[in-house]
Image: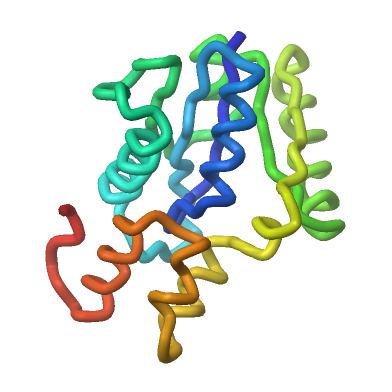
Length: 176
């Protein structure tokens, strides 16, 4: 059984990582799909987001070396997530729901996806309370304030903090 977990992940958080752990408990293959949304202005290019994901996965699964190890794939698409799921024979899309607003939005997307590909199901996971306030937007908004690094230690991987520092310093290369 395969699933897709998609998002812009700009940047990936421990909440996103929790979702992958839950998906790995249920599925043989988990496709972490960086969805490129041209309407969104992102802080990080997809290559950097992929690198941050791989760092988090290596911490979670120290033996992870390359795409497909332990059924974990990190990929990107500028197309529809449901089309990717169909093409990769993933019968499930997993989504996180932190609150009623998330649920209303995700329910709409689920209905659209179901109308496009009737065989693909969406499964919702509800994160634990301590992760429910964490989002990529929250992370990006915190870097404006004094003491942000300490505050974000519980929200993101150290590699993400290093890249956020580089963004603030205006460095050209975000790759480590």
